[in-house]
Length: 110
Image 1 (spheres, rainbow, N blue to C red):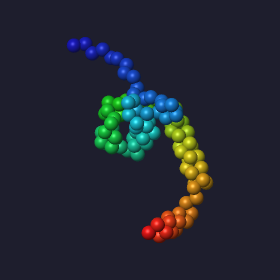
Image 2: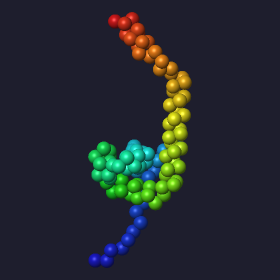
Image 3: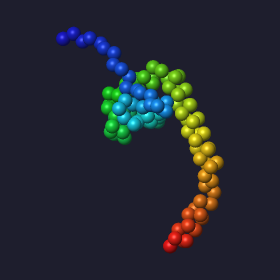
Image 4: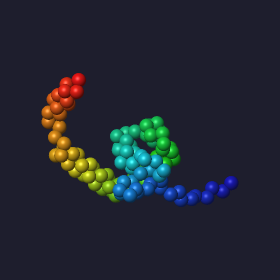
């Protein structure tokens, strides 16, 4: 039997919001790469996210290792966006005294 190397597509898709996901799942590239960088093995990532295929996890990790600068830039931008959303939420919804307000509301309704 002669083994003929083929090129498999990288299982990544970009959704309408610009978020890169693992094909046919809701799991983001951020999630897989962050777990990998924190020391998780592909099998551990599979256990955590059963909708992923083990082969897809290995492909995504391989893609990251070959395109680390571009992926790191994408991840940094995603972190910036998340930080902006968090800051906006804190600005709009002041959490100071929330416990007291919730307890007061509960006591009024009791």
